[in-house]
Length: 300
Ligand code: GLU
Image (cartoon, rainbow, N blue to C red; front, side, top):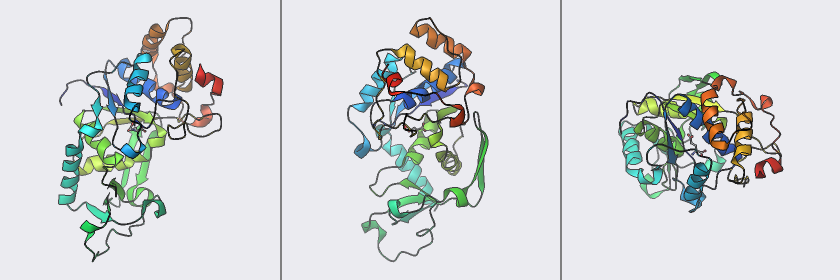
């Protein structure tokens, strides 16, 4: 895939369920950021994890995006069609001994992997045991300039640890697929929720290992529901309804710290919002982002 366009953004939902308000905010922000720069906006369906997916979700999500006039460029890329590319990337890392097989149980492993299998001389034949594949991280710092949050840095070994790129159930991990596909689609700008901020050092390191170019990142404040918890499809956050898109768009703009234009129709509001889009106004933290989303708001 090739393009001369200077800005290519994307929205990359996992089809574990319909979009909820939090994912609408991420879609609106990445869409407006792309359109404000006359860039392309792509949609990628991250359907890599069948056990967690709902078979109807991809079609529902695409219909929801259309209902909100978030019109994407080109064809939707389904990650389920890209397994060969992930296998090739994995092989290239394995061939260079940048990975190791790991028998540790994910649930019992601390979030920063303590290195249990890293240098273990396994005597058993690993091919017959269920193992995940982890990428060995270097003892160095990785950092980047987030367009919303400013400079962010992590020490790869202390803060991140060797991480899984292929799971024990043989499914490719999100970290590997996202990096391979952002490069394949020539993504220049990633705008997504800050629930994924901790993934970014992993993705930057993987990019470096695979000699891929690194996109610019912007991480949005995560929208909380009334109970103070992150809205997520798994937590059964209510799907957004298409009954009154203007009121949800206004709420999304409010959450994003943007000017909210009143008394015009939905299409105009979206177009004007792209003209007015100012990423500098997006709040960095949740405390500045009290938008009091009530159950009623989410139903409007
Ligand atoms: N598929 C991920 C999700 O729905 C988002 C991936 C990304 O934007 O990098 O949370």
